[in-house]
Image (cartoon, rainbow, N blue to C red; front, side, top):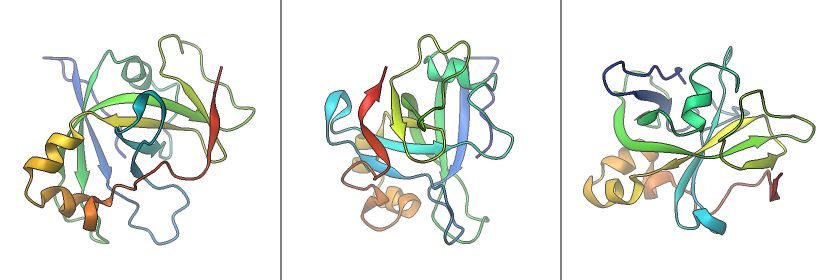
Length: 166
């Protein structure tokens, strides 16, 4: 994924990702699911793993995690070809920061969303704010991006701890 760059005019940033990894057997994938429990029950969430040379401490990450920058999501449809265009998929809000055991956050983490434990690499869990409106209004475009059935799993993927870390 490309690092979002805030717009000088309105404080928003565009976030570009592939809806799922196009590499067979990729270790970390952008997975989308509908959360089944807690404060986020019913919301569409997705995991975003940092790419090479990206970290929680990057300058754009801190304001995004605190909700100080409006992130606009653009996804490329599932395909082996990178020639497909990106499509607008709505606004994002940080839902959680997922950290493996023993890994801590970074300086400046005040105002972050909850920290979830994970048995994978550190990543951010984003909430797709406009998911339901987009699903209802796009007449198949959402399936084009996320695959048959919308590509949204009915529950949280394995690998997350049951408890939020304090």
